[in-house]
Structure formats: structure tokens, C-alpha cells
Length: 88
Image (cartoon, rainbow, N blue to C red; front, side, top):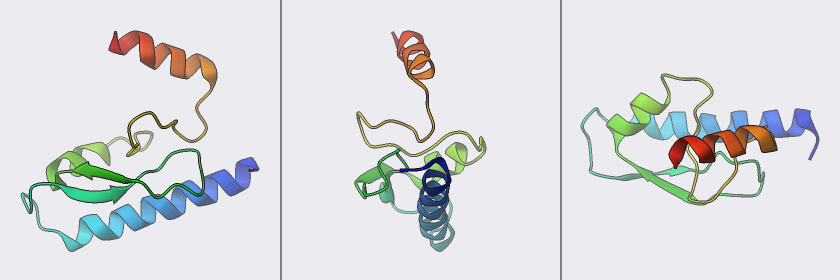
């Protein structure tokens, strides 16, 4: 996938998640299925988050909703290693 296609794919997935978010009220239902925003343009795995958790996620534009084990779009190997080291 080209870099341009990856950016368009991620923007589309974020748009889907934004529509889900906007349809729900703050403090709404426990967990809601948002769409994974990983680097695989064909991924539509659910990411279960509360409305409040998604609200916090969207405060930082570089944060994405990711299914377990999925790679953020545009992340380099060194960034992934750094994230893994921070989590340890």
C-alpha cells in the first residue's frame, strides 16, 4: 500500500469511528465496537472501548484505536520498539 493510500485508509477508518462516537452519548453503553485503525487497510477488527475512553483517545491526533497486536499506520520499527520498551 502506498503512503497516500495508507493515509486515506486511516482517515476513512477514523471517520467511521468518529460517526460511531458522535452517535453515542457521553457515559453511554459500557463497551462499544470501534474499528481498528491499524496499517492493514483491509482490517475491520473491532476495538472495544467505552465512549469516555474513545473521547480521551481522540484528544491526541496521533493516537489510534488498535486491535491487540496490530501495528499503527505509519509506525516505524524503531517507534514500535520504543513503545514496547515503554510498556515493559
